[in-house]
Length: 118
Image (tube, rainbow, N blue to C red):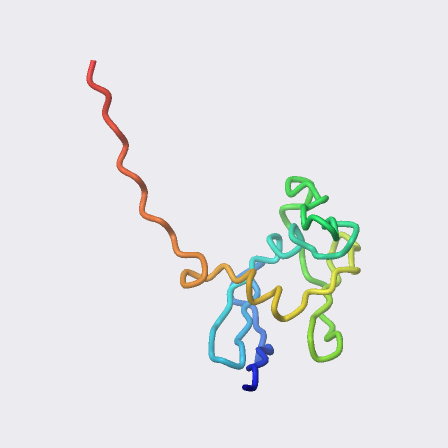
């Protein structure tokens, strides 16, 4: 049985600081660039054995920008960030799992606040 390989079909800016990736299966992914930088998969930013982030998310500048995007073979993208970082290789599978659209990351309804009776 053949496995479908998901690849980006198109990329565009949805909004300032938000990258959109249309995948070959038609899904339109949403990727805030600061979120991508905060979750860089390189060995300096993410522990390769535990997967734990080494980067403190608060240390990533609020106004981080993508300066360049390069394909890595036929399986990943490499971003060059405005803070000079450029060693993260974001596999297509990793990127797809990171999608922040409403379908992939549904907003959970707020739980009703309990009222405490005195």
